[in-house]
Image 1 (cartoon, rainbow, N blue to C red):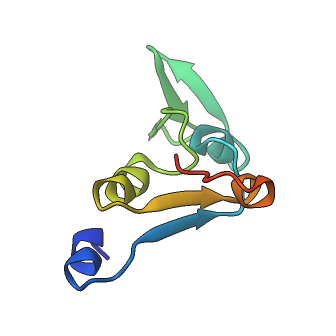
Image 2: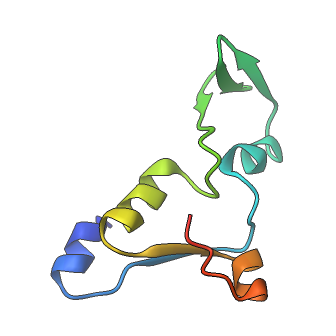
Image 3: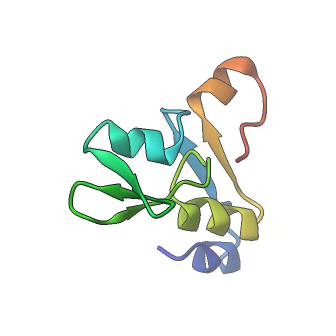
Amino acid sequence: MNSAIWRDAGKLCLGYSNDPSSYADRVREFTEVTSRNGRLIDARGLTVEDFGLSDNLMMVHALDLHGGALVDAAAKASGRSGKT
C-alpha cells in the first residue's frame, strides 16, 4: 500500500527487517549475482539494486519521505535507531 495513504490517514509508517545485511547481499543468498557493465545482474538477467540499503530503495525512500524509519534487528539489539 502507498505510504502516502497511511500518512494522510494519520497512521505512522514504519518498516522492520530481521536481516541487517544489504539488499544486494540478501539477493545473493537466493540466486547468483554477477557484475556487468557496473551493475549487479541476477541469474535471470534482472538488475539488482546496490545502494547499500537494507531493503529495496522504494521501501526505504517511501519511509524517509513520510517521516518513518526502517529498523533492523541489529539496531534493535544495540539500541541505535537503525534508520537507513
